[in-house]
Image (cartoon, rainbow, N blue to C red):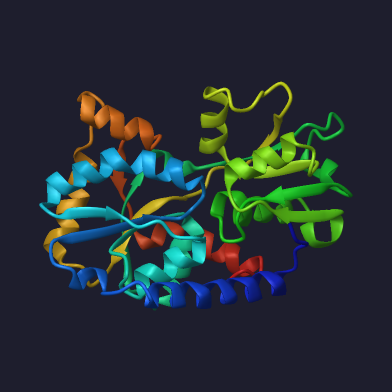
Length: 295
């Protein structure tokens, strides 16, 4: 775990981007140059095994809808998901709002968000703690806090933005900031006493509670943020429009009244998928620039 500074984050992101570029350069042919294959990835905001488990039924469904072989390509970090898409090594990515903004800026607008979950119109983050003295954001002053990944919307950018809105500068008002790398790891850090509090995706929090992987009496939510736009499925803008439509239509057709639709929607923690657009993420971009995380 490391202490935080905006300049360090920017250096870290650039370093990760360079590493990701080298990793994908060694990976072989461009995804779109592989006939009959749709390469899909996702930001690694949960354990790799969990991402694979959640994606398999969706991948099978998309294969039937598009007539393509669908391959899930895991990435090592958030920057790799951005670089993989814009460098044509991946065709479609499950992005958080911030990683979508990064991809859009890096590609000069050459990526297209297709769909989001209905829940992503008003997504939220939660702050959790085991410390009985922490009951509001202001109580974090002088304490230690873990975010998730540096590039996470719900695990870093928006929690940081709401802290700043509450007149709390995480860099100067907190004793120490750490980055766990993933939402479930943040909860583990709080539960294990490594930090006084943590900020994470509300969806992952609810899933951990439902699965009894965390005791909400021991680790409790003390603040829930207002809503904001978050996750979406994004493709490169040069993808064949007919294929973009097939993918979009397949997501929009998912319905929990069918066994297949219910399984996929439950795994994606979605009531349904709806169309989205770049303009929905303008507030995320503004928050990132304001926090010094996007230049």
